[in-house]
Length: 143
Image (tube, rainbow, N blue to C red; front, side):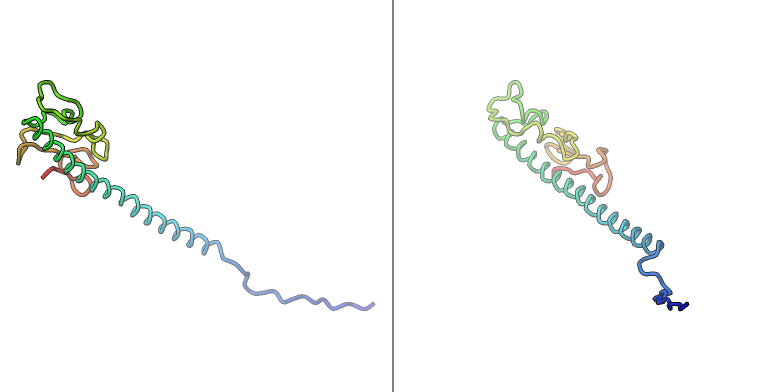
């Protein structure tokens, strides 16, 4: 009986593809990159809210000045910009919408007459909604 030689291809010494450790390292690195990018993007949202609050404070101050020019007195409260206060001769409002009286964190602006450094103050307490703070938690005031 004649035996046929077996033609086997030589086995490669190393298997093709990635090892489990290599895959885990790549997944961890990708997760770190995604986490870093997400924190940068979401952090930009807080900065945008601070800039919006600054713009809103300045706009409210202009509306308060318009109210004062029309009536001869400062509003007793920011709500006087939306609804005519009793006894305000010359009121030509509404000067603002009710939504304009809240900062980007949906907290009402604080309005004080007289102000600390001027006839009135308009203040947003920032992201933490408390007086003081730093960065996005810092107070934003009309100056």
